[in-house]
Length: 301
Ligand code: HMG
Ligand code: MG
Image (cartoon, rainbow, N blue to C red; front, side, top):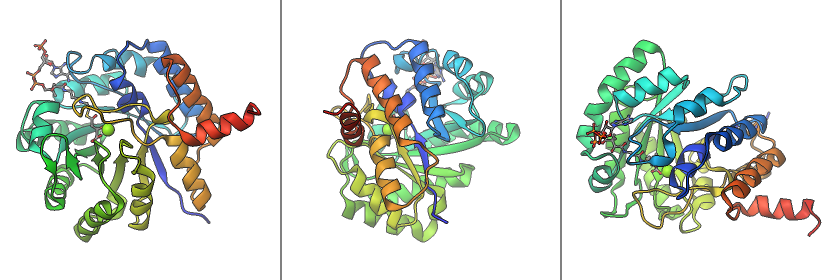
């Protein structure tokens, strides 16, 4: 039997949060429905944050309300505090994610507090989630480098990750927010982390700014990591990291994984349809190399 890898599709959140023009709910919902139909098992469908900070995620409640749930599919939301948590649960989010960073400066810009303060803010969220039996994922941003602080030490990433696990997060998504990491740095980071944290509790979340994402994901696979965040059509960026491009494209990750013999449960052709849909809706190029190559073959060009 081949091994499976879980794709965490972050396009509807990490991707769309960074678009400059407004996106209507119908388009967001249709994207999520296409991803569901393609067999994606975990979709980050929105976030319950300040609409002043991230206007594109306003109306995430309507998105949750409108989407057609697939059997067994997890629809998750980002929640920075209790207010976000309450809204996410009321909207029907299956899981939530809290987010901090390994960089003090990034955390200040992103969620207006220190790392320690962010953990304190998450405490009531963790308590409520335990009571409600809602699973909580933890993000750690800037795991290799920070747009404000430069290099980040692997020990700092380990400590923040361990704190989040100790508080009750079931999994840590390691964010290379600005896509700056190279495979050697990612290997060094994962060698340290996996000394004390099980690989099954770690995910990688690679933005592809420097074109390193697939290589870094391959390194993560070699370190036993089987959970990969990605964004259909390579949508996105980070509003608090100038110049950061979108996450690695889901289509490129799935193409690589299937080529390596991993199962994802995803139909690549249907995933490509989802990416082409949202690229056309946003009037932008599809950033997935695999999608463009396969779409080109389909149309005979
Ligand atoms: P704050 O200023 O410290 O907190 O913001 P506050 O409680 O004083 O609230 C400020 C305003 O936000 C108030 O409104 C609140 O009512 C409102 P005002 O009085 O100014 O009109 N507010 C909320 N509104 C809706 N939902 C809420 C909520 N909470 C407060 N839940 C806060 C702190 C976290 C709220 C703010 O900084 C924020 O929302 N930031 C958004 C951060 C964000 O979403 N960033 C992008 C996602 S993270 C990311 O992309 C990285 C990741 O992909 C991994 C990686 O790539 O590394 C995950
Ligand atoms: Mg991100």
